Image (cartoon, rainbow, N blue to C red; front, side, top):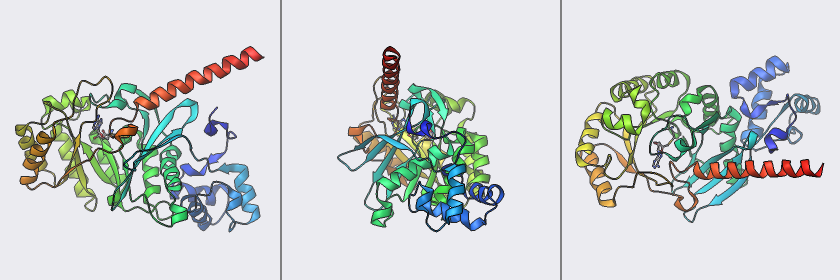
Length: 377
Ligand code: SAH
């Protein structure tokens, strides 16, 4: 049994409530003043308290009431790995023996946390390791924000009085727009001053291109958007990202334009994973430029990260450099994502295999323990 499933049933997990939800709980359920909700949020997200008894400015009566009805159920880490380049990866345990990976990438001027939204993924992008795992389930709001909470606490936000996590990207496992109702409150908490207080530019949702949900997102949250493009034409994109058959490139770009019109302060980045001989040609770079002219944006080139059993290979460095030069010469801001955390399988598209292995191993382990206890009985 995991720590998460071991907690008493029926208690409300306050980690899953954004400011609106928390205020509603305090005012409507507890008959308390609204500011109590804010106090508790500050205890949880600024001081990493998960025990009401530690919340000393609340008064004994309220603390007792809270303990009876609610809890702050935080994730537990099964594995904590650190790469030689400083990248850190945690495997957090979830109910039912599942695990979820969260990756922290430190850079000189910022620290980015890569957060997962689902266990597995159902979109089946051909070049992504998570796809091989299939879809298991959506993460709850608590499980999404719990990743930030855990990483922030581990990285010493509290003790060092510094902000180690300056950016959060929803680029881990899963398609965040297919878990909209849980992801939006979690992103609200990342943005909220009583939560992690990040600016809209610094919280990014990455999508494979669910057009109607991009429109919904523009109504619901003030965050930046990353769109996984990976191909400059529909024929190729149909093959790499099967979702393209439903929402082809022209419709996707039109949705991006609407997003920009609605959220002028947030930015759009297109992601393009470079695969040898597949999408890295010079003509493809020029075709990409034509597309990107339609949507003011940045381009993030990602050298393909291999994983066992994949048919794709990373493009050669000189091919990557040439591709980048063509886009750059056309006046488009282009970044090349350095591959980080290779030694701990923490790079894009690599979050999965090991989880699955471990999940399978932990399932085997649980079965073994159960069998043993049956034998012993
Ligand atoms: N489902 C969302 C977010 C998850 S993936 C999306 O599709 O955007 C984050 C990024 O890593 C996506 O752009 C994804 O296409 C890319 N990616 C997936 N597998 C990869 C691999 N093996 N190498 C490099 N990038 C990969």
